[in-house]
Image 1 (cartoon, rainbow over the protein chains, first blue to last red):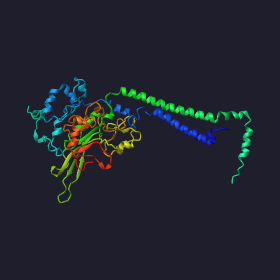
Image 2: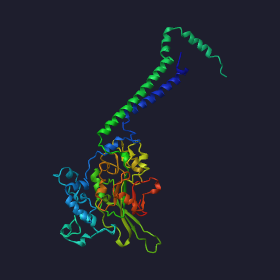
Image 3: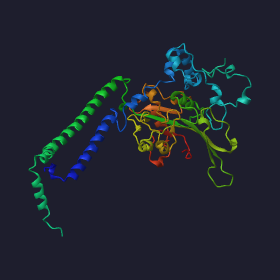
Image 4: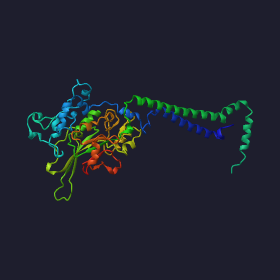
Amino acid sequence: MRRPFNMPPQVVRICLLAIGIVASYLVARYFLTPPSFRQYGWYRGEALVELRQRDTVFAGKKACEECHGDEMQKLAKGSHKTLSCEACHGPAQGHADNPDVAVDKSNTGVCLRCHEANPSRPKWHKQVASKSHYTGSKCTECHVPHSPGDVP
Amino acid sequence: MIPPEPAGPMKTTREQQTPKPVEQAPCSQFSRRNALGKLGASLVGVFAAAAARTAKAAVQQLLVSSSAPKGYDPTKHSWRMAVDANKCIGCGLCAEACKKENHVPEGPYYRTWIERYIITRPKAGSGEARGEVLVDCPNGGMHGFPEPPVAKEDILHSFFVPKLCNLCEHSPCVQVCPVGATFDAPDGAVLIDPKYCIGCGFCIQACPYGCRFLSPVTKTAEKCTLCYHRITRGLKPACVEICPAEARVFGDLKNPAPNDPLQAFYENNRVQALKPHLGTEPRVLYAGIDKEVR
């Protein structure tokens, strides 16, 4: 009886089993490995594409400037120039896409959020103890948020 | 000793059997040539499958790159975030904006948050340089901070520290992920593949900065992505966009903008990383924090 390389049958069987295991691994890998795996590294390269396809919620200052340039110029002159529009007016991607959609106005207490006195805040930052500062209803009675130095 | 002879009689019995044609048929079917042929065929099959897979991958990559939003190559950017704690006023807008922008679940889940550090004065005559360290973070600092728990006169030093994923170069979270779902992208963002995350939570335990959480909605790990969907569209991350004090600085090291705030930050500050002794090499650098900050 002729056998491959004159190997005893038990060795032939174990070799066939090993080949079977390796082959089934290769077949499984062929079907299970996503095509973009190892595109950049040991992960699915397509995940990068999927992660960047999400929709934005905040439009950004540039989008606001397209229509509200005049307000923006006013803002840029005062000490509130570092503020983003959406910090006070709320996230505005919906409004930027369609101007008929109103801006989400869930942000409240916008002034005191930053300006309420707190010893942990840096010294350079203007702060007021709201209880002793003014007992009226609105900060905007005396202050202009778009140009804080001005008086209404 | 085994007698050397037993092979002889066995051989003779086999030779006696060989003349029968019925016995010969299976022998000729399992010849060396036959077996090698089958082996070769199966190997060719496997290699053909591998070749087909490579071809499929190449074709699919072409399709992927054509359907993806164009104009973004992760190898041509190197995003960095920096935090100037001297400027942070603790308003919490960043933490709130992050929640809205990334649809982070309600509850104690934050991709970025603000911590308040209060270092009290040492007791008179105690011989200590600094007193107790109090750290708090109510609601991630999203709605601001209440009055400090100690009297103003007892505070030696108090400040806010915005926290986020430190985007480590040697990320412990990436090293422990058993399924390759979290990775260090070529543009410097450490990201999670939500489709491949199995929610085992190893990365959450591995992160020394506590920047990850298991989302109760998706049941996968989540973390700061540097607002990957924003930065790849040319926008700033939501926290940077919203920060009124310019405490958070963001930029691209490979494409510096004119008057780049990130370069200015590196030039004007002495920076430090959090927990440098761990060797994680955070890409997020801090200015203006005390030794107590972890």
